[in-house]
Length: 112
Image 1: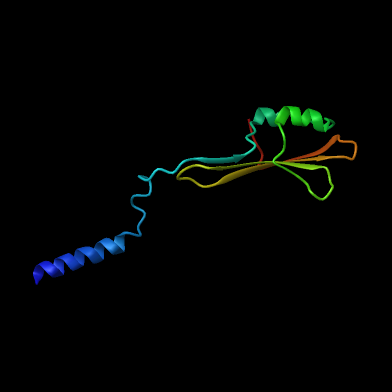
Image 2 (image 1 turned 60 degrees about the horizontal axis):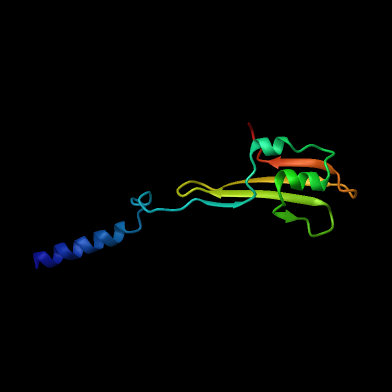
């Protein structure tokens, strides 16, 4: 009788502790990187007045172009390290109708 009680108590204890994240760091989780990886040096090369071809040569093709006819390019980089929080950087470039860069928005700001 005592053996059955100890076994049942051990099973219940094991089931209750199964949801705990005590072994979370032991399990391998790969780093997941998606999008356009840009360094601060690459972003510093971009200046207002550049053409779309010059920007594409410097940074590569954008992740997304605005589908509604405005000349806006989005360079998005999302990084999810194995056991850390997700970070995302978005570089938004706006061109005028002649294809000349008129606005640069970098969120969050890349620092050197």
